[in-house]
Length: 153
Image (tube, rainbow, N blue to C red; front, side, top):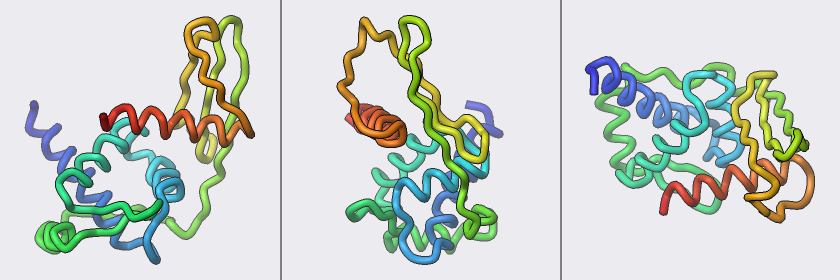
């Protein structure tokens, strides 16, 4: 792995730690992910990977649907905090749009935050019978959650 890549990896994780720390109260998963993705610093899959690694390293913990820094996470942030920049504009609520539609033999699931595409997945209707129901938002969020859970297995 190149040096820049390792530096970016560490910087992105510090960014996540500092953003959790700077949040007014404990951020919920959906609101936090939306805010981070809105920044455009990383894509959804890297965000899931980094959050999973921070959880595994016991730098953050998840209680119900909220993230908290552990004591170890606070220590790491204190050591390297000047290297991290928390997300800007957290107070602005991102505009999130969901779409689920059929395109030929595929069902497409999309999520956009402030008009930026952050998640798009097209699945063959013949190969995948997901039995998702509810609003477009509920279907996309459930699919994203399933992907995250399968990744952590």
